[in-house]
Image (cartoon, rainbow, N blue to C red; front, side):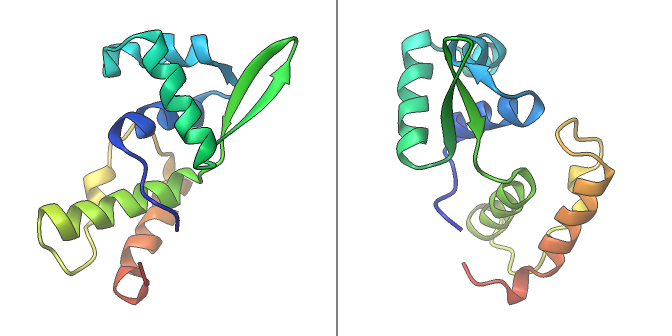
Length: 125
């Protein structure tokens, strides 16, 4: 997998995973409560994400819109692995129940995430 998105990049990806495509303005308006920054910061972050191929940009009705290019479940699994390893110093799979109640994943995605986390010891970073 490519580099794990930064916290601010993840905030924009979460918005896109819920509803896409979105313009930079729409993305900013939906993420501003979490990010608490200026529209120019959103634009700059989107430019970085385009360069890293985390998002794709298209034209729709004369407006540039963005779509997530990173898979939600595998990105969340990578974050969980990174958190477990770097922050908690855990060398075993994290329990999937830590995601129970999440508004970001549905039942099927939760099952996929559980499988990815269970396969973690065999996965190569």
